[in-house]
Structures are given as structure tokens and as C-alpha cells.
Length: 361
Ligand code: NAD
Ligand code: GLY
Image 1 (cartoon, rainbow, N blue to C red):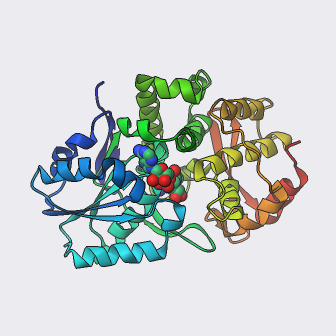
Image 2 (cartoon, helix red, strand yellow):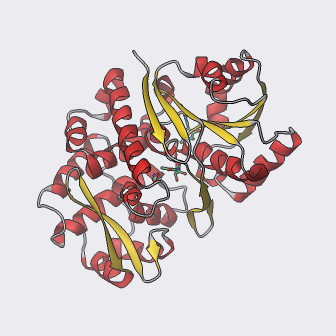
Image 3 (cartoon, helix red, strand yellow):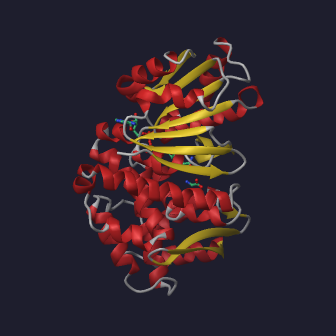
């Protein structure tokens, strides 16, 4: 299958390449975008066992000096402690300002490696090799980097665009269904916010059917990256249009926090958040009748129609720390129908009241 190329023009210009087999040839692609002599591959233990050697071999074959830092997989590693360990590792291995970091893994690896690249020596280059569906369609593109604090997710971070993104879609074959469907949460989000035609295409599949159809999956990933590219180009620093990408995330982050970032994954929490906010929107006349049912059904096709313990009113409190809050107001993303979204600025109190007065039953 042909490799698809999408170019992002933001504070840095870079290509996102999508297709099978890219990791085996990553050395040549990396060589095209960096003058580095040393590369530090940052990855987690699960991804290292699967793809660490393929990547280091491919990079060394192009003459790069390669060192590798591996941390335990999972959201709890997206911490100040891991970041400090990465900084010290880079220092011990004498990475200089002309060298480059390689983020090999899912969104956790990408976010923390990007933040290490933004801060080490006041900024060095980095390249994204995303290996989860979520990272390929969302987190590896657009330059948001971060770590979590005890008080909430992604509360410390920066904007730092990568030099290149290689989405090797063969790596998705080793994902469990559970991790694959996390990415489907974000895929469905793109359909909801910007593309009725993408959403309608997604309605034709289930997780099992889509995983079997590699051509369709590559095409869907490219559609998502194109939407993300367009949004990022319009508003790189997240002051308007880019907030649309946070559809479902305000409640989603509260759900993740409620479960201490271990009980429920990001993609599933976003799925529930999208469903809840669309229900609230429809009940309050902000979304066309039927939007909620169509979203709920589509989430169901992918195993994402999940129930959680806390009621919406209980989640409201955690939204106070959300990055979309500005003083007494909060920006909520509402889809008035499938494919159409807008940012609504609301007093925090009014948002809380709306959540408290609406139950999903
Ligand atoms: P993750 O990085 O924790 O990966 C999920 C699991 O899959 C991990 O255990 C990992 O080891 C494993 N894994 C990765 N690739 C694999 C493969 N090919 N085969 C088998 N196992 C594999 O989680 P994620 O869902 O990729 O990303 C979630 C993170 O992304 C969250 O921290 C979220 O905040 C962040 N995020 C960031 C942005 C952004 O714009 N920067 C956008 C969305 C999400
Ligand atoms: N995933 C949200 C953003 O990139 O803005």
C-alpha cells in the first residue's frame, strides 16, 4: 500500500507519513530531517520489547549513534519523576543541542518525550514514531507536549512541534482490542467535530471489521490527521478553533481523575465524555434531536459505550482544574449535529447546574 503524506505547516513544517513498514526504514527518513549525530530513543518497556531493536537497528544502519531510555508503560509514568530521569539520561549521554530525541510509543511516550525535547538545553529536536492508534491520529501531531500532576492531567507542558511523524500502521497489529478502541474514541471525535462523511464511514464498521481492513484503516487515520492538521494550522496555540479537539475531554479528564488515572484509559474516558456532553446538549436544546443516539450507537459498535460510577454532577467538581477554564468561565465544546462543532463559553456555575440537572437515564 502506498505511503500517505500529510504536511503540517505550523511554527515548524513537517511531514506525517502513514503506512505499513515505516519503522524498518525509519533511519533514512530520520536522516532526511536532522543533522544530529546522536539520537536518544525514548520508549516504554512494552513497546521496547516489540519494536526497540527494529528502530535502533534502522537508525544505526544510517550511521547515527543511538542510546535508549526505557520507562515502565502506563499513564503514571507521564510524571515529573520520569521527566527528570530522562533529562539526566540525556545529560549522561552528552546529547547536544544539535542532537535529536526519538519518541517510540503511544501518547504517554510522545507527550513526555516532546516535553523533554522542549526543555532539555532549552530545546532540541524530536521525532515521533507513534505506535498506538490514539497516538497516530492525535497525540503525535500538533505539538502539544505535557506531563501530569497529582492535581490533574497535562497540567505542565509546552508547544513543541516534531521534525517528522512516522505512523507505521503495521504496529497497530500488536495492540490489544482494548488499546485499539482507545484510539477509536479519538477517531469518532474527528467525525463528530468536523466530518459527517467520516462519521458515516465509521458507522459501517465494528472494531473487528476495521482491524481486518488495513486499507480502510490507513485511509481513516489519514482523514483524522488531515482534520487535525487543518485545525492546528488554523490555531496552533489553542486559543480558539483548536479547542474543538477537546470535545468530550472536560468530562473525560474528570473521569480519568476520578479513577486515579488507572481505572479507565484516556480514549474510553473521552468516549464517555463525548456521550455525556452530547446528551446534556440535546436536553438543553443545543444539539439536534437524534445526535446523542447516533453517537451512542457508534460508540457501541467499537465497544466504547461504557458506563461509569460517578454521576455527571459528581464529575463537575473536577472540571474546575480543567485547562479550558478561564477564571469564572469554562469553554465547552458542543456538537450541534454530527460533523458540526463550536466552542461555547459558559459561566462555571451554569455548566455545573446543567450537568447536575441532567442524568443520562
Ligand atoms: P499509552 O502511551 O499509555 O499506550 C497504551 C499502551 O499501549 C501502553 O501500555 C503501551 O506500552 C502499549 N503499546 C503502545 N504501542 C503498542 C503496540 N504497537 N503494540 C502493543 N502495545 C503497545 O497510551 P495512548 O492511549 O497511546 O496515549 C494516551 C496519552 O496520550 C495520554 O497521556 C493522553 O493525555 C495523551 N494525549 C495527548 C494528546 C496530545 O495532543 N499531545 C492528544 C491525545 C492524548
Ligand atoms: N488533542 C488535543 C489537541 O491536540 O489540541
